[in-house]
Length: 121
Image (tube, rainbow, N blue to C red; front, side, top):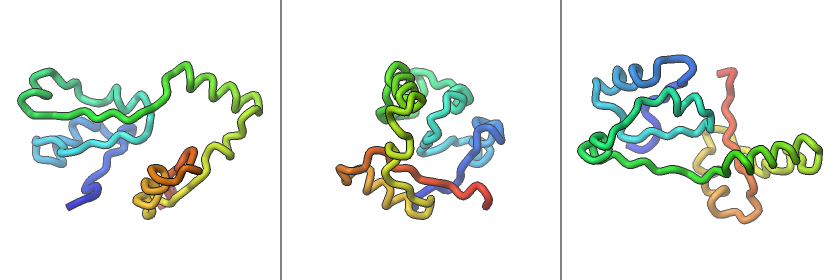
């Protein structure tokens, strides 16, 4: 089976305990953190070298600019030099996430591709 079977909203639950409960104590096969929020990492359980070696875990990071670049980008947006609406070149609803990933990977015109969530549902 491909796709998310369960999702956890870290701010709404005790994520590590909820994850263990959902999986009968086994833990997740794959965890995708896509919020970019520091609190998510702070709520994550600490993993030891033992975990990585003997449970054969892998951590696959994605690229994100560092704090210096982020601050500079926000300064440029705040000063009106860069308009945020021009940075997000593509928006997709959640049910079109696969198309969003294709565009982000293949479309040279895509600067920032965003998947939106209907919070009213």
